[in-house]
Image 1 (cartoon, helix red, strand yellow):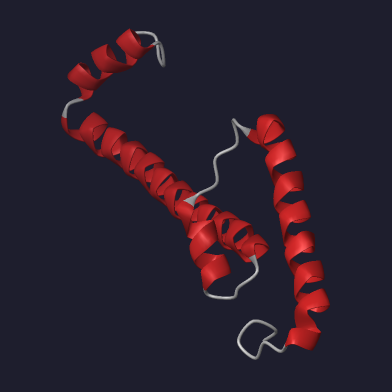
Image 2 (cartoon, rainbow, N blue to C red):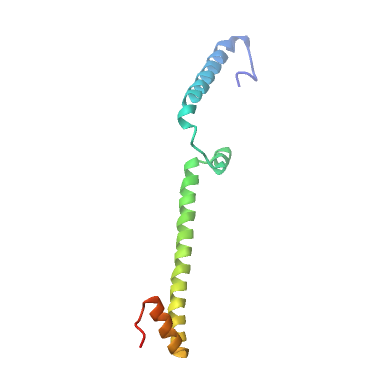
Amino acid sequence: IIVSDFQPSSQTGLNQKLNFMVTGLQDIDKCRQQLHDISVPLEVFEYIDQGRNPQLYTKECLERALAKNEQVKGKIDTMKKFKSLLIQELTKVFPEDMAKYKAIRGEDPPP
């Protein structure tokens, strides 16, 4: 606003704002060495550009991870049930072969 509507009387205020910005950038530059190995996902900058809180990115990542974890856990549970049922059915149809299989796996001693 000061620059777009510049009046000679606002020169002092403009100088103060510019000095404040320069000081802030110098402070950021001093911290650069301490933060050289930190990487920020580009999505965080997109959140900031959209005017959203970058902490929401972390929250949403955690929520997505929890949802994916539940989904994978469900798949694992389903596969365990399937394996159990498959072994039961195979044992009915191929009792000798399944006894050998179980012996190899160390589940049951051979008959």
